[in-house]
Each structure stands twice: as structure tokens, then as C-alpha cells.
Image (cartoon, rainbow, N blue to C red; front, side):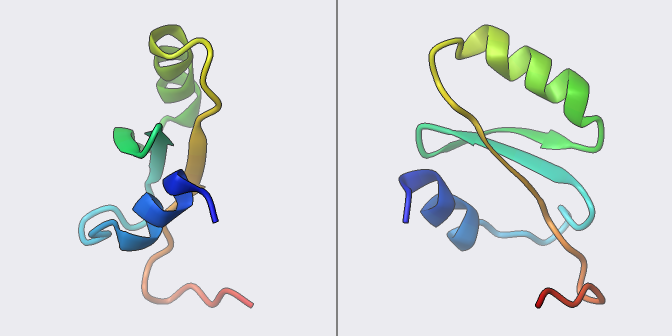
Length: 64
């Protein structure tokens, strides 16, 4: 697993349900609902990095 995935896995997701999170180099750098503007800002700040992007599911979401 990648360092960014480990950070996502261990992240306290309370209050982040149905929102996107962006992790770069093992650090949570953005969270919110507008993924396009978040990615735009992150790409400008970290142009040489590949961001890890995930949507945090709520408790009712079944992931198979």
C-alpha cells in the first residue's frame, strides 16, 4: 500500500462523510465537495506530485 492510502485508511472520517479528501505526500491537503476547484489548487501547489483522491462514504454506503 502507498503512504497516502495508509493516511486515508487511518484518517478520522467523522464529519467528512460524502466529501472528497486529497492527500499528497502523506498529508491531508484538501477536503470538501467541489473536487474540481480542490484539485486545481492542489495541482498548483504540488505540481510534481500525484494526489491521492477519495470520496469518504457515509455509514449507509455498501462497498463491495
